[in-house]
Amino acid sequence: MPVFLEPGQKYPVVLDCDKDKTPCPTFYAKSQSMRGQLAIGQVLDAWTESDETLERLFEMTREKLAEVVIGWSGMVDPTTQQEIPFSPDSFVDVLSYAEARELLTKVAYNRHFDAVEEKKSDG
View 1 (spheres, rainbow, N blue to C red):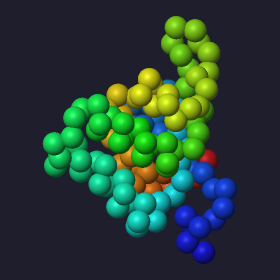
View 2 (cartoon, helix red, strand yellow):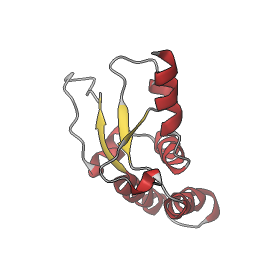
View 3 (spheres, helix red, strand yellow):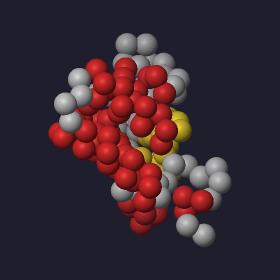
View 4 (cartoon, rainbow, N blue to C red):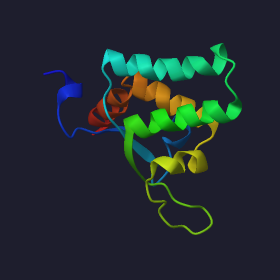
């Protein structure tokens, strides 16, 4: 069965800048079909190929992240040392544009499998 059809599946995605941190900030995403990959690609392309306002580009990015990322762990507020609760609205508070783009790219290309396979080979 294609992996994106498996109900309830979520996959870890770690940003390159976070891979050596403890605890490791981890996003959990849904696997993407070609249609999902295309929709993510359209948002990424809009950053270089459209005349949208910066505000609209950020909103498009947040909306797409809210569709494909379903949770996170290890997100700690550096001032309070408390876990930041997951919320689709929080993406704009915890991610830079470059990090949001990296996250969307990894989800679009189902790059979370790389991290899973890497952990399996380490253990």
